[in-house]
Length: 296
Image (cartoon, rainbow, N blue to C red):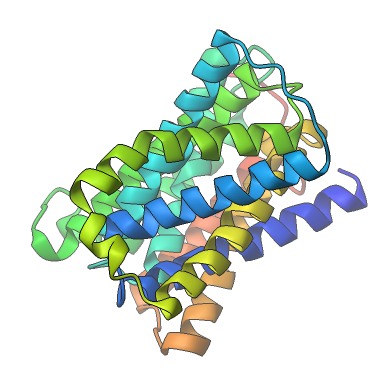
């Protein structure tokens, strides 16, 4: 990768690391639904304004609209809700650790749909090690037991599966679409999907929205949706889907540090061990330092 690609990846990891802090803060003021709705709606409005100011013309067709809506569901609506509901019982630090499962799943999903993505011993070995880290972080003693206190962990793991499919879908269906257009289309699609529910079921909460809640939501949308998704699609354009793996390594430490500084949240020993194992797995499957191109 070029230096600018590395810079974008570190920026994206830091921005998405901060998203776990924003959710923790907003859960004190808003319902999970409104957290998600304000994030996508405010981001979509700002991105549409940017497109207008830059006078970027977008030629829409049925196929492109369909792909934007699929990305909206897979990369915004479903995972955002699962993370928001999951973080009601899971700390932001643990949520960020479990989020690393996205890359581990992508390793197995991508080769099924993208011919250029191949399964190698590096990737499979690294993914297996990473999954072991996820199991330790969740708690191996109750991995198959679901109850109220640990339900959030499983909601977040389901969200990572949705993210993994979204990354593959974007590479297959939105390759060549400008980053700003892709981000705008996806977030606008998310807003269109959620707006009817917002006005039919959450109108009272919207009417009582405080200035502080709106301000935090606006900052959340600008940093973690507008800026982050522009960078996300630029990385896909210039460095490819597999290089987003490095970003996944950066997200947990940044989230843990921010939650420690602002909320005094600390990770448990098992979560820290799980994170270290996940990082080792990601480094192996990324292949920059331990190379193995032999295919399975």
